[in-house]
Image (tube, rainbow, N blue to C red; front, top):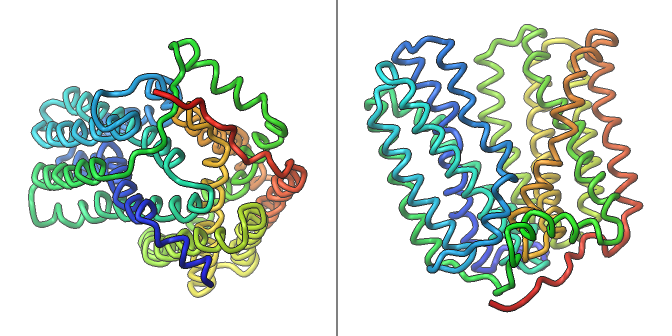
Length: 412
């Protein structure tokens, strides 16, 4: 177990939990938490629905990621400078949100929320790039798991925590408290170690083209991209359809929410942390195969529910086991994506690969309802389990050095 615990001893790994917290904190401030505020003050439901569009920057962050690869600010270095700027910007933007009356000025609230989403997506870009640049290979999985741990804790604080706090203090005060939580992140960023200095793309054109040319020039690049697109495919589709499935089984929304939050959150968080340690012990390839197979296999809990029907104990077990295994798979998978990124343009390559990882689920997942209508829920969850097979086959075919990122161009 020495390799397991050694993976978490680095100061770099410990510091990433705080940076993960800073990245996760603003995510729901322009989404779920904002919608709760709007609903509380009885804003028209159509307006609430339209305001969800402000979260679109998260889906298109790869469009401006090359700019963050190309340019560096004069303080804190190439990655930490942008992190500090976006963190200060988020403090200001969330505070601005708190001063807007959403019922009287919904358009101004939309502008403020869009600013939060843009800054938050930008912080995600540069945080992913920083993590990619600063972690040596033996710390990629443990650093990733502690970053995700901080991220998920922050989402709980600014999501369920903010919602509970709003019963006792006004919504503007809730938003201001969340804004204040962004400030310690600037100190962490200032004290964080600086990654190795590398040469960024020389021109804007190079910043947009070289990341692609670099990636596809590598041995096994197409296989690696296919693996990235398929690894979470079945799990993504099953997760999206799980709530309609449980509602059809006559579970109440309160029961679903309580089990998902209490059991699902804890199980996934534990899985992420343990996954990071086990990657260090087992190796990245073996962990990807093992955790991917386990994550797919745990959809059998939902398959059993489709056969047995409503059963609270079975549902609790299905949620707990599935989220635990999915958390371990996530830790290994994001470490794999990190290993594919060249430090010279890690912001762009990570943004592109992370977007590619959900592309198949978001497009082909539209057919999930037709599968359920044609064959029933048992067939659907059986198919979701089988969807892991192509990804695991691609993993076995990948060249051994496919996840070895090329050396970056060094220099100032």
